[in-house]
Amino acid sequence: MIPNNILRKWAANEPVLNGWLSIACPFSAEIMAAQGYDCLTIDLQHGLVGYEMATMMLQAMRASGVTPMARVPWLDPAAIMKVLDAGAYGVICPMINNRAEAERLVSYVRYPPNGVRSFGPTRANLSAGADYGTHADQEVICLAMIETAEAFANADEILSTPGLDGVYIGPADLTLGITGRRYRTGFDREEPEMIEAIQTILRKAHQAGVRACLHNGTPAYAAKAIGWGFDLVTISNDVRLLTDAARNSVETTRRLAGAASAAAADASSSGGY
Image (cartoon, rainbow, N blue to C red):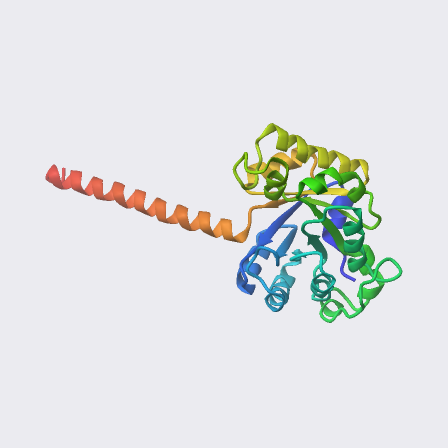
C-alpha cells in the first residue's frame, strides 16, 4: 500500500498543511493538488460535493501524490466506508460529542477485529495498492471533530478513544457552541476565551498521545496555530481562494484603470506636455 504521507510527516515531527475542497469539480481539485499541499480534504458536509463527484476528484488528485482525505456529512457508516473505498486516506467526521460516538467512528474506519468496516475497497485497491486490506488500518487516519459545547466538555473521554488518530477543531461551530452568538461567526478566533478553549483541546490531545488539527481561514492564522503546536492546519479553501483572487483582480484592474484615465486626462489638459 502507498504510505500515508501525513503519518510520515507526523513521525518526523513536521506540521501538515491541508487544503480544503468545497467546489465539486475534478479540474479545480487537480489544480489545488498541484500547489504543494501535504494533503487535501474533500468536504462532503458543507461543500457542494456528492459521492460520485468526490470519487472523480480523488482520481484527478492522484497524479500529484498529495494525500487525499474527506470530511463526511455525518457519523454515518455508509458514507464513511464509501469514501474510504473510493480511496480517501483519512476521514474527518463532524459533530462527535462523546466517547460512544468516537468509538462508533473508529469502528466504521477499521476492519475487524479493530472495527466493523465492510471489506470492498473498489477503487482503493487500485489507487492505494493491491495490499490495501492488509495495511489500511495502519495507514488510514481517523479524526473526530470537536465543535460543540458538549464535545468540549467531553474532550478527555473522546481523546482517550482507542484507534482515534486525533481531533479536528471546527472553530466556527465551537464558538457558537461555547458562547452562542456573543461573537461573530467564522474562523481565526481572537477572543481570549476561544483561544484558551482551542489551546486546551490542543494540550489535552497531546497529553492523550493523539494529534490536534485546526481549521483556519488565513495562512497567517494557520502559521500561528503551527507555532502553538498544532499537527495539521487547514489553509483556507478553494471557494475563498477563488473569491479573494477574483475580487483582487477586479479591484486592482479598476484602480489601475482609474489611475491611467486620470493620467491621460491630466496629459490632455496640459496639452500633452
